[in-house]
Image 1 (tube, helix red, strand yellow):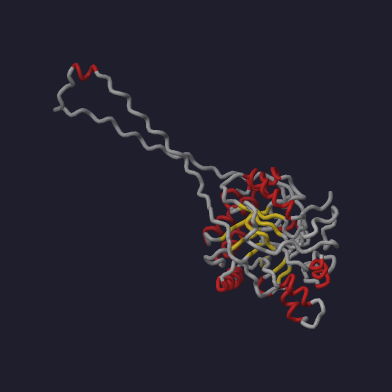
Image 2: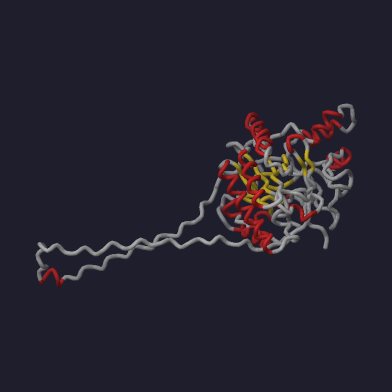
Length: 373
């Protein structure tokens, strides 16, 4: 089978900032949460007539009173739905990344000016791929507080789901789901209260072929809890769930997976094309089709990774630093497209998938190739 998934190889850098690539996926059904039916209170007793009350006259008794209307049964409570408006502010350029490190260290390099203007100057996502429960909150806070001070919106990527990447190049993550729940709560506590975009666990839903039924159910339940934890910590955070990309699962199939992860009530929408190459013109209708099939509130939207999709996808099977690719649309929250909340650079252009450089490393020749298109 041709490799259709995104490629996400994560490498830690200062402040826990990382970058990414990964594999391919399948599905299962998450175990539904059983809710007890509401207990109806007893109806009031019929009052006993007072002994001093005169008996009704024949005329009165002959008049038939209309039957009392029955009260409708109470409506079953629906689970609360988080609905926050899509962010509209400018995106945050975090001052620590591999490309910025390279630009600062290579001011005399003839490639420096092009890389600086086309890639390093663009706001990109900040990845957190290390399972570090003791420090994750402070590392996230360093990014979000910097964004708040600048009046900008950060894009952050928690990437520590257990059994990450099916044991592939980006394997790792938390040791179990109890540990993951604790880690994601700590992650959420570092978000602050300002606007933020959270790309929750790339490939975690679309790529589940390595999991058995029980493992899939556990993963989907953990993602649902993660979305709720983030919203509880910061109601202004916009949380997006993994929806693969237009060259992978059919929209109805992808929506089925998202439904199992409770995406309609635990997220603010979906993300597509992370670390991949499919054209924006293909991703926009795909994202809308997934959202339509998913259902849920009309506030659900989508964000699309446009970092490397300027020339579209390469030939089938060519996922590792394929030649002939180009930068896509610059990151923005003003897309002009209904239900498309943002175009983002989730994968930082120039960070290798593992062929033109070591996996996850910034490779200037590859960056130049993308910049020149």
